[in-house]
Image 1: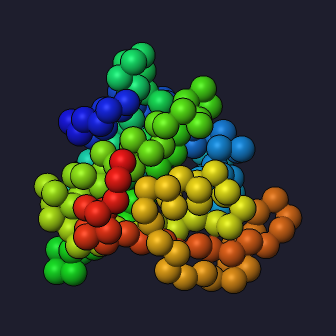
Image 2: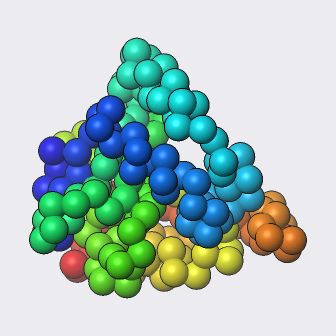
Image 3: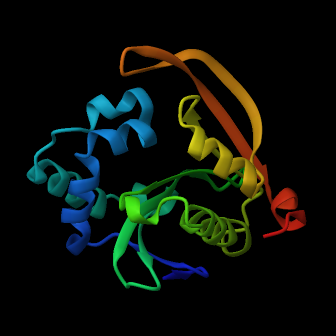
Length: 186
């Protein structure tokens, strides 16, 4: 388990599937976290999520190159979201991250920042990565502000690459180096 100030991150287990299912089928939530990919995530039956989990559980590749965590609030001991790292390259020491706070009561209260700091601490100091990257869509203003606060730098933009609720948006590519994380203040 990874421990932050406000959150604990625990690898996903079978008991988390119902929460993951609820968050995956919340259309407004998946629009924020996934942009145009949200259309592929909504309205999936619980059985499909269970089958995907079982497939990942038995996949050596998943555990070697990434992990999905359930995020717990330390104050309430309740699951409030998920985060992950993926596409970990052991040669270049790079990985991608993502997060979703599924419980809206925890938005804007410092939980996102603590989730990212906790995950980055693990990636930079336990796994000894050099760089962590992410992408989001240009309409996700709350996420962009959060990533900038933590120290992520804008590294690129794929113009009109996302189609969300009838409009085109850019895909925003961001990254942070270990040295930048070390020199930043919390």
